[in-house]
Length: 351
Image 1 (cartoon, rainbow, N blue to C red):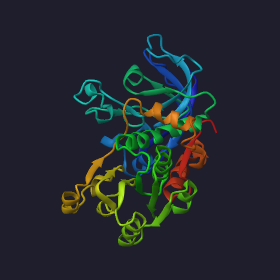
Image 2: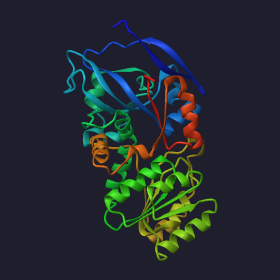
Image 3: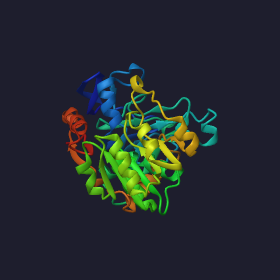
Image 4: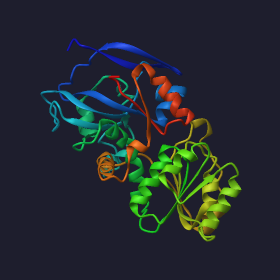
């Protein structure tokens, strides 16, 4: 194919350039996707400011992707012919390690990612080799679902997987520390699961989070006061589950103090390697028999589960998508997200 396309290429820390590139050839065992929407996530923002894993440069970032199959390789093992509408998620597992063989693909020891190891969705086209089809995430978009909603499904996937794993159900009291898009998503999913009480503890996006109607919105400028308020709202007992939906270790001790005995604290947000250590009061964990656990990514049905949640109306993407930008304005889109002026920014490569 001799046609050209536009791509936003990560050159170095803080530097993105728009390039005219040849449309990539369709892999013999894969697909060529015309990208219609790609979300900017918190990971993209961090990578833009700090660099890609392994020092990778000259890479097309972006991994929350929805588009249309433009071509199918002759040896492709996929049910998606040209014209099929598909949603993508980034992780590609090895299929061979101890975790993969037990279905724990999110814990793969050698996983790769669209937007880091392969070119991603901040471009008009993306080529998917066969290993992405067989060991990654490619799902059909439900009929009538807009591409921008399907692209948002990747963000939803890990939230659904987290709450299913830790048993949010009828009557569960949930506290979410973090008022960004992920914190708001945890609120919507907790409600859909039947939670009886949901509180958001946050800082600068509480007014945006108000639209998701938690039972309580608590400013976290005084950690002790925030803990006291959660205890007051739960009759002095504490929350069944406290989810840390933000990329900082500072509130982890605070989360312990908000959890009830035999409650669960979930570390959902990864933190920068320069500040990855935290000190927790082990006596609270010991005497209160509190579970402290991590939640990362999602299993093999994660993207399909998220698309189902959107299709069913449990998640309403338009409440998150505050702006759509062109490839030329992608840095402005990153800055919008960093400033908290939109919970989610979408890139439309064809604007």
